[in-house]
Figure 1 (cartoon, rainbow, N blue to C red):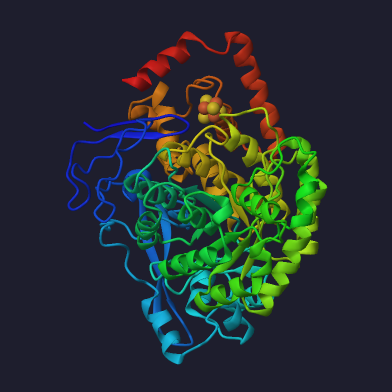
Figure 2 (cartoon, rainbow, N blue to C red):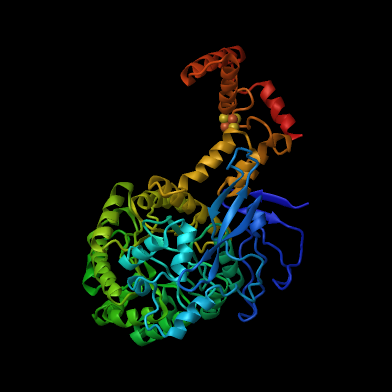
Length: 602
Ligand code: SF4
């Protein structure tokens, strides 16, 4: 028998030791919290771990595709979504369709994902377009395949997508070398998106584990992914990630550039950095984080900070500036960087190297000085038709968040904002996915387009697969809460479907509609794990006598039977009757409750 256990952070599946053809020697899903996989023996022939499947993560769901015809070329594209099949018999309520990031399923990572964009990019290359960026096409009034694809995914008009991309208010990160990509859009007038960070370090992880984290990320709803590897086999790790990524992949190229000079900052030059940009561009990286706004004159502004410069990239550039007392080479060579990005259609994620690393440092002079420079760099990128987003903080208390959003919109001409959290307090290491999801929901509701997740391991260690899931679920909650607050079309459909299933005691539907169905079901099973319990009109929280939803159901039935028509009157009479019941019983948990729970378990 397969056993499924979950905790808030993780889903553990101890599956039978089945061999998944071509995938790893054992093809077994590692137990959650089991630590790390073994080091990679052969980076060209990794021993991949069998991922949790779509069907295991999302019971009663199917992956479906809408056929969309691209008007310019006549190509018919298949745009994915997830359909949740429900037991609701009300007309139009038989299923719910959701945005889906999980990518093609059942693919052997050694072979890589299908090359969805091959013909799209091939046609453009044949025409010899010198600046094949989505922004350039949008400015010409050309709806690309990518624009039509994201329009269908978002339920928007392709012309609206085009106008947002042309205006720089949205980006479609899509390197022409990343042919496996299912295009997506980042912009404040679209669904709020979530970024997952993975990557090894010099201390831990392997290629197998990083590819597993990628698959885990897309399964649990990551819209974009950053490979922040700094350890062994950087190039080969990224190659496996790119060939298996259905979502845009970003990097911080200065990390690999530093590895190339054995970690000696003094030896880092523009030439090494440029060579690294081209190497990663050829592999298909969709967006680069470059900390070009960390200017020499801003560095002294961090001297009096509580936590100085906390960005890895920011601190490398700052050290380089100070060593030679020279301006940041990424700023000096910005036009060269733009030329590389324009050639491949790599989006720039202008880094926030001087972001605050503590509540005390939030919204200080250094942070906002860099943001102003980000604005200048953004407009220069647009002149060369390069797509841009701006990275933002960091650690910011709730009352200081709106100023961040206002300044970014104003100074960076409404380019998409991409924020790390922000973490709204410093006092909860081990729970920073929560401290930051609070800030993420707040800044998302104000217009931030992409939320970079934070895991429970923030400030403590390299996240493992289970931390990735905990961070992603926290951030998907934040993003969805922001969509609701912004009244994004269709966002509330999901809530309404789940509330209806909850009120109608369709437990199976409630689990299957949950953002994390495995955990929702496991928590219910903890106290009522029988099939009968899945039809009960109560749960172990209040028990059968005091289930408020059951009482409301009874009140409504009572009203129907007694011919009441006015809701207020119905509730008044119903609650009066229930109040008499309560007085009679005198306590919330009765023997009857326990008995019912027990029955439910059998
Ligand atoms: S018993 Fe309480 S928690 Fe459980 S379904 Fe009823 S109202 Fe909700």
